Image (cartoon, rainbow over all chains, first blue to last red; front, side, top):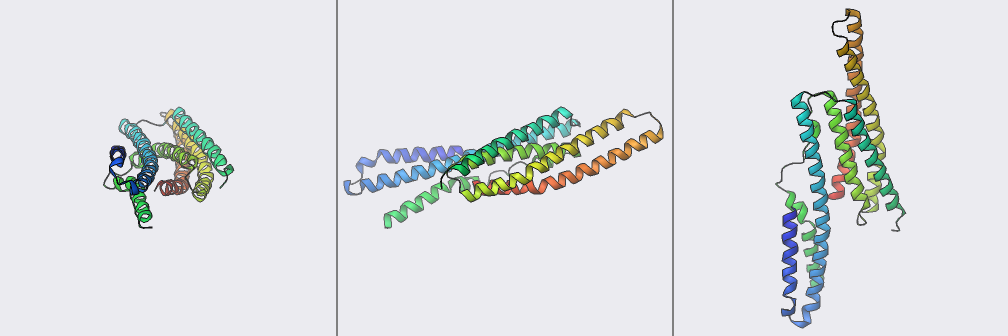
Length: 106
Length: 149
């Protein structure tokens, strides 16, 4: 997905290079359209990166659990403590981010 | 007017590109489905939850995220994290009961029966804790996907 976003961004950059060839009366409008398109694409890129990130993390967890299941390994208290410490750290970071977001003006 | 409309349509198409690009991709892995035992299921659920909360943090930290989405995520997290804490306590109790049972092999029948009963009770408690945690964690996952959709 990221490759597709990159290709689209490169296409936009290439189109921008042809801007001087556009008739001068519509050049400003075309530049505005390309600018808006670039912004929309950048926002889409952020979305793509985060979705890819979550998918990768879940795939990693699944691989780990598959390995545990295949080996018939019983969970240890260290595994459990590490997993819960991870949850607590993530939860604290989330609450801090939420507090910051709530403090921002609308 | 006509140009503005075209620009808006172009922006929408480009912003929706990631969603369209994800069509046909393999589904997101479900770690819980890979587990074979109760303790592995609980572990997979905890790890999945941590990954979801990290994703939710990124969404909330994005200035473009609508306030309503952030609040819905906050509400889901406030319910799901205590469920995850309860799940951890239940897994701990199950692991201890299992270790006690394993340590008693070769011991007298009454002692084995007591350990077996304790393990059964701990397994039931863990099963209930997993079921109780799955709903709020699923709710958070729904909001995360909606926030990113």
